[in-house]
Image 1: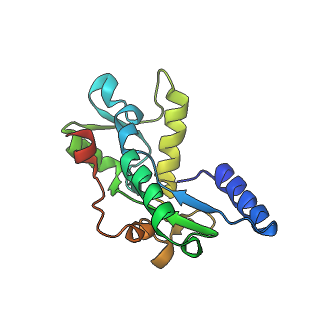
Image 2: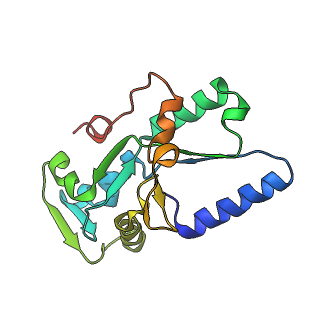
Length: 172
């Protein structure tokens, strides 16, 4: 779920690394599942507050799954499977509007998130609502990628792994 500026810099760095024959791998994870209560303010008021319509899917992935995936692919896959690739992970795909059901509370649509880190939360929620919360989002064409570039397409590189969902990680 890279924002435009970060994705642009990462692309430039990856291109430069290729010119000096140094391979790289980029792993897109989406927001961490563990950050959801903080992001939507659930810890502050027991509700899910979101900016935007909340209708587009977001790729959430747990920190443990990300760490395990990185360790697995770096120790089990040959470099040729990783060199100069973008790997797109996805633990659970969900619309922000559907978080209320998981948290057993209401969803409130707001224009901005007040309080500590409110500006950062507002910006991130707007980014997620644009579609960029999906690890398969194609910013240039404003649509989801498909096939080997789809959200979660790299999950298959860790065979037999069961990806954790929001309910499990947050003990809901």
